[in-house]
Each structure stands twice: as structure tokens, then as C-alpha cells.
Image (cartoon, rainbow, N blue to C red):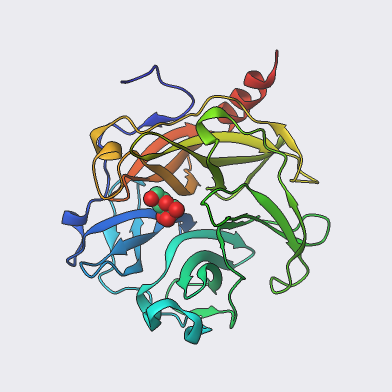
Length: 312
Ligand code: BMA
């Protein structure tokens, strides 16, 4: 079940981080946020302890492959605690996305509340001291990714409100202050066959001359599983609700054992990518909700792939 390589190539040494390699006992480690910090690749790992609570751990690397992992979980205050499911606020945070704007790193993630999944925002300048907003989004929302710059004078974010039946699409919203969000519109993505159940944003949008490059996920239901796929698209630079190119094919499907066997089978899920000094785009993704994997490409190749797949 291996196709010819597309614009994203699996790293041969996958997976790059497994629960066994963590400096603490855990069940899974996956769906990491990613950024460059002080000339190193920094991953914010989502690790599930053996009580199935989920916490974030920082890991850093010179080469983007070999990581040194902090043994202490990040412990910034998650506010609105009375809403948070089980009150397990320290260990109830999922799928971080890190966006740098100026010298601040904004981290969006979701958390379970008694009403469904809500989105929380925290920020840091040094990955040691964190602050967070004293409010959550209305449920059910997740997969929030902040754009790295304002658009039309406003902050912009992609998000995925989710219906009760588990379906959902990518929306874009705007804010003057990162507190009040509105002017929401669905992104006009065509629904491809592999993403017919739901789609959600993944990596932080990357500005290219042709549009915002995003890597996102889509899912489809099989007889026994919900399979997750990754795809690339270009959104309009000035109005990201408009799509410049959205190729019909996925660029990564669950095929390898480390993507098909684990806590949740048949899942490739990204929440972070980093451009390395040599121009390689390192896309970090979770394999089967169990380990961290790496696929590589380049911004120019992925952009050209999107544009050429769009041409008749
Ligand atoms: C989504 C999120 C992800 C997870 C994926 C597959 O709804 O919860 O964290 O990787 O499901 O289980």
C-alpha cells in the first residue's frame, strides 16, 4: 500500500519520538506544535500520561530530528477552570499550534469542557513563562491556527467549528485584539473525497507569492475507522476565505505501521511545520495518535504542486 512519493516525503527514520523515548512514563506522544526558537527547532509535544490526561512538554533540536525533551510539563494557568472537564486543567490540553508574531509565540490549543471542546490561547516569549487568556471559545471548536501576520489590519485565524455528528469545515475569523473574534466565514474549500467527513486546519499558514500555503487534514469514514489524510492548499493572501488552489489528491495517507497501528489507527495529523535553514520544510505529524513522525518537502515545491494540480 505504498504510492509513489508526492511533494511530501516521509523521513526514513520515522517515528522520530515515541513514548518509550520520553524521560517520563507515558502512553503516547503526538500532535506537536512546532516553531523555530533560538536557532533550534522547538516542538510542543502533546503527551498522554498513563491516566490518559494530556499535557504539553517542550522539546528542542539542532537538526529537527534528534530532540531533547523537558521532563516537566508546561504548567501555565488554564482559565475558566470551573468549565473545564473534570477540573483536570493542568492535564487537559490538546494539539498546540504555535504562531510567532514579533517576539511573542502564541499557542492555540483545545481543551475539553463540560460542554464539548473549546479553544484556549496562551503565549510566551521564552517557553519558560506563559500567560493565558481568562476565557475559552464557545464549544465545539478546535484546530485553531493563528496567521503569522494581520490581514487587513486584523488578526486572523483558521478554526474548525464541529457539529454534533462530528462533521465540520475550516472557517476563518478576524479580531482586532485576539479577544473578540468575528466576521467569520467558511473557507471555500472544495470537499474532496478523502475529506468528506470533516476537514480541519493543521500547520500555521506560510506566506508565498501565490497565497497562504496550508497543510490540513481531512477524514473519511470506513467500515471500521475514521481515516485521517493530509493535503495542501493555497488561500488568498488578502481574503483567506477564498481558495487559490486546492488539489484533489491528499499528500500523505496512513500507510506505514507507525501510522496505522496505535491508539487510534489510520491517522496522520499535523499541527506544526518548520522551515529549516537549508529551505527544507519539516512537517511534524502524529502517527496513529501514538508517536511523532516527520515528513519533508519545501514551500516552493508544495506551492508549485498546488498550482500545477489546479491547472487543467
Ligand atoms: C481529532 C483530534 C486529534 C486526533 C484526531 C485523531 O479529533 O482529537 O487530536 O489526532 O482526532 O484521533
